[in-house]
Image 1 (cartoon, each protein chain N blue to C red):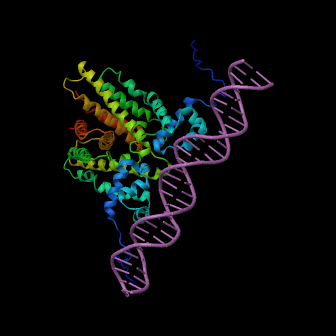
Image 2: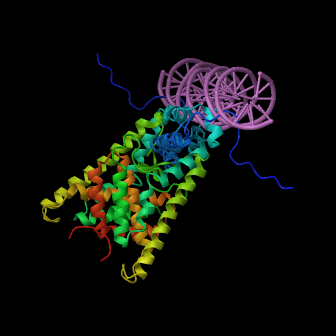
Length: 203
Length: 203
DNA sequence: AGTTTTCTGTACCGTAAGGTACAATGAAAT
DNA sequence: ATTTCATTGTACCTTACGGTACAGAAAACT
């Protein structure tokens, strides 16, 4: 006899907080402080929950960071994936830069980019997170490269274009904008830099 | 009656280690781990000294970091100040990019740039260091802007050039290269990106 | 109603962080 | 040889970290 798994009928006390809202608050802390710089007291205070609730809902600090990172990519950073569907390679890059610059708007403490400042250099205990972020940055380069290769086949980009370098240049400017944003550079200034960066574009 | 200050005659046990060599080792640790990620055990082990020696010679962790940062600027990063004396604005930018790329050569763990990855986002206790690094990054932009303004007056750059944006673009690419280097991008790849970045240059 | 089950809050655990007291060491000065 | 005094090594301090035990609270099931 087979027993069907009862999916969502746990009984017991229901969660007193919204799990996605708490995740947004955690994201804000990680964004501002980085992975290592974010402490459990600061996280729990920002999330409005206590420690055992955090661990029950998210596992531990590292898993919480990963979930916040996912939410970052599908939320504030969603312009990146969206940009890929722009018609031309140039439009893709423009959408990425302008999307990032716009994302910095009205942001108080959490300036820059979580994928960059989450853990650029870190201690031994944060090595895993650091390495994962580095891989993610490289994965973004790879995605861009594939997109640009398609653009060459479409005749959008000139034949013989170095798509790998074009992708790395795009990622480099994006990362550079993140560093600038974290240094207090204003939105308007970032926009001017983005426009200048596009002058390097082929054609 | 005036007493002359006896300058270098302390008697007592002499220091058993070379203070500049120890500083170089500390720099390597900060470079790899960032300010927060560098622990006293790792620092003292790398420096080959014990804790009281470190505190006697350098003050504390924060002051040690500042001294390592100074040494970084006058050592590995000296190409930046040197680049300013290049004859043209374009040559300045080229020297900065190629200097940074060359600096990454033969570097094992300490990839990237201390000014960027030392403390991009950090906890409360590292706020001072983080802010100082952000100011330093902005100071670099200012220095470049002044250099480029001079280039306009020399007729090297076209009249009406937006020197502030040009300076910020240069710093953005440099910061982006630092992020890329910290992500494992190779020297050759960085060189190609640098060349592409120069395509945005005026004229 | 009572039982079950999950979440919440307090209070705590072990560990590691940055920093220091203090006695021992050893080179220079007398 | 003795005194002097900064450096060295051990051992320790306080504090804060990430993580958890456990009892109380509250919603669903019987």
